Length: 435
Image 1 (cartoon, rainbow, N blue to C red):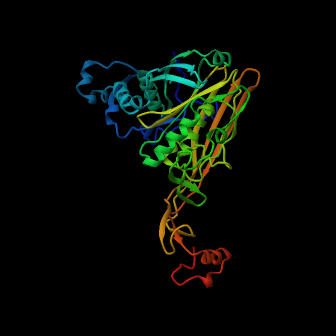
Image 2: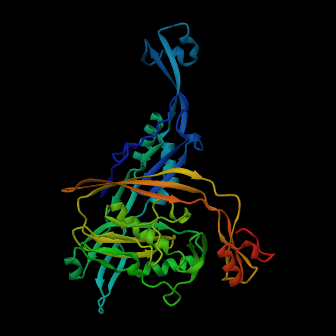
Image 3: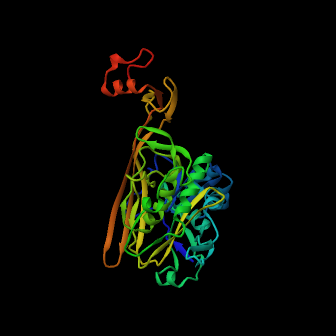
């Protein structure tokens, strides 16, 4: 059993603590709890049960217990100058704990799993069970930290979490010799409310990686393992970002798989050799800045396995619309800390619609080719400390475009050629002169 170190945020990576002047507010308006890439924001204003008022008495400027005659009426202090009092807000840890239990622990907690890893008669790696580590928010400590944060006007708390190791049995000798013996890291994401075709593609894509072995010191390429993406390989058409448009194509939703694959190695501290964010912020990949888009063969996700042994992937989706990549292997003593996201340069989506042209739909037909999206920039910091190599501080930057509501209009190949050449005067009368 391991307890994740937890404090009011005073982070070695960026030393970023948000203080609110006491004169301006009685407390922060909300508290943000962070655990790895998981972020939970709780509104203080919506929980009046957290706070109460108490009267504090002082004698000669020092806190003291007042005489009984003062407890019925505070006016007695006025006639005795040595006695003064002040009213202050106090915080109810029990009420705070109840909120943390309902709003955070209910979503984060899970029991430790168990798995048997073996090979079938044909040599295929088989998993019986799932080796997810257990985790449990330390509610009492989190409530105490929250109370301190509120008293100090701090708006962020690192959530204290107790982790429990799963039971792992490796029956195959060659896997044991390769170093497969424990969970090194886990990547996870949520794809709730996905359309049916997107869910189908995520399931197909996740299965491609189950049982994949990454040798020690080798480079993992997501696209190499994924293979072809088309109708023959089992994919359906679903929305895919294609430049300035978002249109159905085979494999829409596979970025959910690549994002899940990315988060585990990134959080553990493996060297990330190639990763690209989406062109606009997608709600499925919250928190922003933790996504990894792929578009074979051009855009890939790559990382190096610099652990003491091989890494074995167990990938699956569960009934709660979570996708998982469990990386089994041999953990080392590296210490990794991620901090973020720091969101800047927010830009509202343009109000004016964008119209583009295509020859892939009937002439004159109009279809939606993209929703509105606000723009922003997101930065995460990663601090990796290892014996012999010292401390490496990395900055992961993501820029997301602001996009308008976009439509496509079907045109003839001849009209498209004229439009591409900029010959607006030759445009048919029914066609808008400006795209």
